[in-house]
Length: 122
Image (cartoon, rainbow, N blue to C red; front, side, top):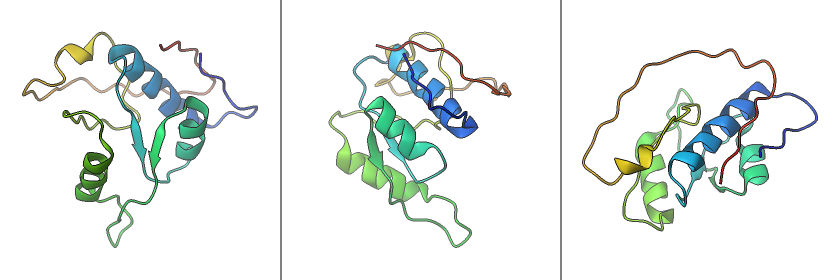
């Protein structure tokens, strides 16, 4: 169960629900959250994840994906890496395709999260 803070933080809620869905879809996966965006450190602490906060940035402030991948690779305990934005919510068993040569696609839905959502993960 995700335990929300006493205040509602949209960024925190979106990341927490996305992580909960990934945990349910790929049990036992090592989850690394990269960067220092709002809500990231709190989600890492509350959900017991690993945090890679110091990612190199472009002159305009965007995270450099090559540095994300380099650092994730050096922290990885498994042979397969999967990059997922922290606002992607999974449904079903995506774990069956992770590890196979694949490119996953999906349909985007914007959900206006205004209050905590309940999610249970193993």
